[in-house]
Image 1 (cartoon, helix red, strand yellow):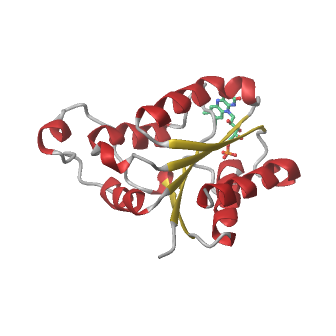
Image 2 (image 1 turned 90 degrees about the horizontal axis):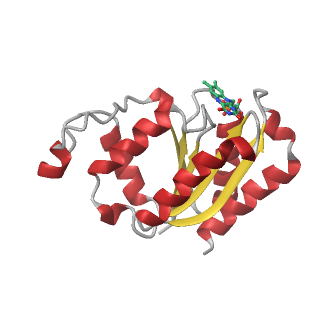
Length: 180
Ligand SMILES: Cc1cc2nc3c(=O)[nH]c(=O)nc-3n(C[C@H](O)[C@H](O)[C@H](O)COP(=O)(O)O)c2cc1C
């Protein structure tokens, strides 16, 4: 059976830098024989955590929304390609709401997942360091494996497409993630 790779786009700007980089990673994985799929968080109904602790009591979130279908895709995939731009030193609201919902998931879902993340920012890596640090803490904490980080400083709608070296890095990351 083909390995599955899930792209998770946290930017609300369709076709912009984050999605372009996620697509490029997925392309690398697909070329290496994986089945790829992409979700756009801003087009889904994923409510923020209410901290009701219902999940800790019953194992199920009290919200009944699109997160349930995403969770199934997360379970089936061995690689998650997570993309978010830097918004005020952190992830977008859509990506943060999505990650907060991980609070209620059985930890076995995370174990051994391979993670590539793509983080465009207006100012470049210096402005992304807090977000990178957050992900670098979160990933091993949940037993996941970090494969690659793709960063750039750009604000133009799709200026990342002209960054040949980064586009190549993204393609290579997609290949590496499924060939480990
Ligand atoms: C609400 C908002 C907050 C932002 N905050 C930052 C920031 O703190 N640091 C930074 O370098 N860029 C910041 N940016 C710029 C984006 O990170 C940058 O334009 C990025 O390339 C957008 O990704 P996208 O093309 O996928 O939408 C911000 C943009 C927006 C809309």
